[in-house]
Image (cartoon, rainbow, N blue to C red; front, side, top):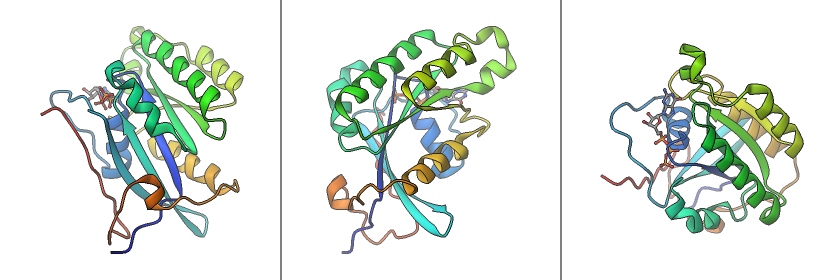
Length: 204
Ligand SMILES: Nc1nc2c(ncn2[C@@H]2O[C@H](COP(=O)(O)OP(=O)(O)OP(=O)(O)O)[C@@H](O)[C@H]2O)c(=O)[nH]1
């Protein structure tokens, strides 16, 4: 069985319930799942080919569990990552503190990992500005301080989600990092050449 080559490992990090899985669902499946929230257990993986100019870049996206219970496991998933999408929920100030924690971790442990600061649930604050707990300019200042791109997104409406992943792929393409193989990511994608493989572990 031939394995699909994964060009860049991308890891999703952030407090539980910030909306990491929803971002991946929106980007890969173009949908927003409604219904009871199911927390991720361990991590889920999806590979997604993206057109960048004349090239196709395949992102291998690891969606980690945000619960602090799985913190040690999340460290395994950011190892060797070329990009980290560090998420915080615009309606939850504690999630911004957690994002700062992950940024420090990455700065200390993964110096080649490019950081993207991603605000989630933008639709909620658009609907009711009083729900906003993180000022846009404060987050932007933090992003500039750490040299990160900053996106405000909504998985519900799709706002800025494609733009975020496109930017990750474009940045990867414009740098000279070594290609990683599927074997290096620990995942064999078999014959699924133009699609994705999504192994998701939810608690029910
Ligand atoms: N209104 C709104 N709700 C969202 C959005 N993104 C996620 N949610 C909701 O937030 C809850 C948590 O979303 P998840 O995507 O499961 O969060 P997660 O960060 O993957 O959570 P863990 O797996 O526990 O780490 C769910 O009820 C989602 O429906 C969004 O853009 N807008």
